[in-house]
Image (cartoon, rainbow, N blue to C red; front, top):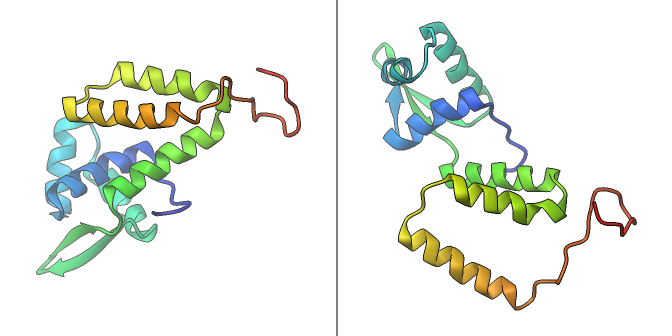
Length: 142
């Protein structure tokens, strides 16, 4: 998994296109993004340059055009983003936050079955209450 690689919400929009297409020219990326958001071509090219500099995208030259390819797997980046989020919040609030997320997103029946299986396995070893991890050594609840 990719570690400590941070991308902005705007960069996520670009990456979702490249991950979906597996490769794309700046012209293709710009055309798709301009249908979704009101960004200038220069803004999109700046985002592409940042993503290449960060090592998230690679480029190959094809004539006068650059073709962009993902250098990191989408799932790895999503897992890292989720890990970063859950490491930054109180452990006592993780369950509530996950419940909120589950209520906000559409899931397939297979996704729901997988989540149910995971939760059932975790239930066997789950504590009655999760301790607050906000202040080291402090056992008080938030």
